[in-house]
Amino acid sequence: AGPAGLSFAVAAAERGRIAVTLFDRADHIGGQFNMARRIPGKEEFDETLRYYRRQLELHDVEVRLGTAVDVATLLDGKYDD
Image (cartoon, rainbow, N blue to C red; front, side, top):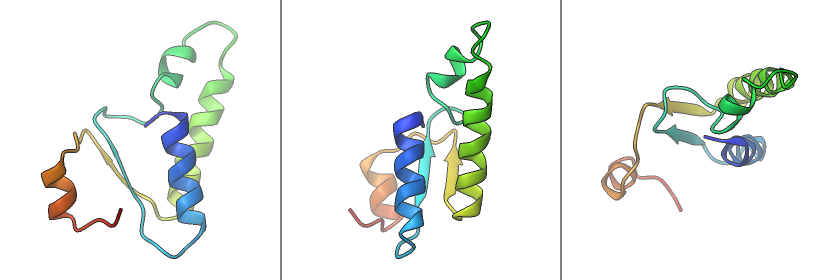
């Protein structure tokens, strides 16, 4: 999940009425931030990712890394839309 997905997951979880599950096909969060943080002088992206990891934890967002999502996955999980 990139910055938009991370931000949405945290915002949805902050509302507190629903359980939030964040799926990512990659084995780590961050999306393109992971490329950007390798550029010299852009180490602040490490802090941004640390912030999101902590926010996901604080708001009990279930994170499923290494998981490609398809319709069957969502139907089996009985997720709301």
